[in-house]
Image (cartoon, rainbow, N blue to C red; front, side, top):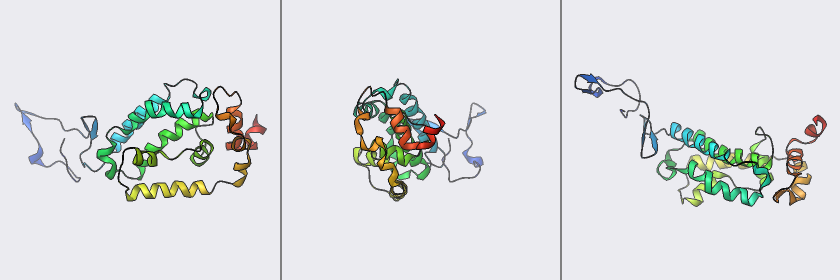
Length: 204
């Protein structure tokens, strides 16, 4: 793999061995980090880590039967290592799309635990679970420096959270938190009604 700023590979960057030209590749995994030719983009590494983390999420059967605290303990033990591999090395190079992909892992997991649709809005998911953003968790857990992109990302998420209607906070799921306990048979009904409103109730 030839590291370069862009454009075609120069003639002098072509290498032959025993009369045969070595094949060029656009990605190469080295010590678990997937490198790309520009050395500034880690899009492919983030995508691979995200997919690995999502697979680990679906290894947990029926997470709606778990208490939220137990579910988050499992997330930290099983899923977090998959998404964070190599994060300390590439943190300052991550762009907004990388941060969004990383954050989507925790959002997807919370939706499974809460028993709500995977299309539910992030802001309602986090507020319902009363959980912090994954990007914020990583910076504290791994003692990572604050970056402009990270600040921009979190500000955007907080603005959206501030737009939540006051009616949401008056729903049963927000007022009666017993659904957070394990083996609560009405969890999905309460959380879906809070997130989707009476539209869901009418459809049902």
